[in-house]
Length: 406
Image 1 (cartoon, rainbow, N blue to C red):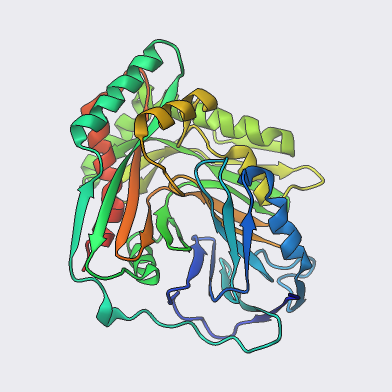
Image 2: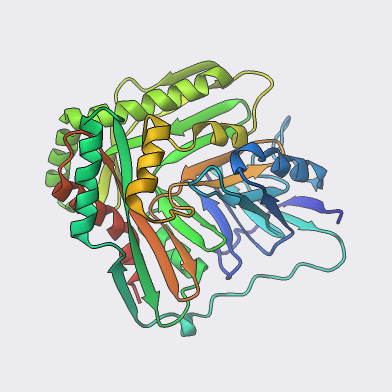
């Protein structure tokens, strides 16, 4: 099937994302959202080794229409593929190229891209049926808090014995509704609650992550790893004190530095220049706040696509642990659950290799009347199980509050 993508400037601001087939990835810098399916791209296992398939298909789409700038099209112009990738690198993955894509850049530029085979016009997306929205929800922890704390104890024992330095363990939580929850409706709630986060909706995987795994715009690469967390209270003075304690915490600073070093060292071979902020900052993210450091640089030629950088970085120590292989093996042993797309890369890529991918935390997988989510914590030698349990509860609240808003 031969596809053509036509991009035009949009004089009128498109409406908010809507429809059960919504795909979206929005940040304070750039918002992309669309509907319909022009092409599904099935990426064989292991997905990390077959991402060139996505770029090949994007390159095969004939693109025409307005250009985004004097020399290069605007990032996100033309055909764009959205993907929510499994945490497990050995799994297959799927990308979707929407039939209709709306875009908005920071400076106010707006555009629309229509991808079709010319056989039939593309109609507007169906609006969510708010009259049939859920009216009740039940929420349960798949594993008891006591058993989960036992896993934390087991992990710290292995770390003390020298098997590894850090492992990230996640709690699985399920929500059951009386009616299906529309992904666009949940995406809208999260956009209202967390406008500074990276908000996404891809194939029923919906969330608002604070963490940028990697972005590539032209030859500029940027990441913002996060590791080290403390709850927020809503009291500005108390939260400021907690932020100071987080910055002064040797445990959290060491955990954070492991992630920064890995991200920096993984990106450096691709770059002619790369630098990280000398000191982390504290970034609020709903009910919690994190230590965060921006890593930014200039890519060498030939410039890799954002997908190549995603495959290099995932999973970082912030969601897996360190060293990578023993940490992933311990996750398989102690969690007893398939994470699916939780903590996997989620984002977009255009035909020129530009794109942005967040870390798929603060996320939920919707499947009919069922919603499945995880909340993870970084475990090191001196981790306290009860403190980690409270941290997992605080992180889960970012999603549970939106899910339970009936």
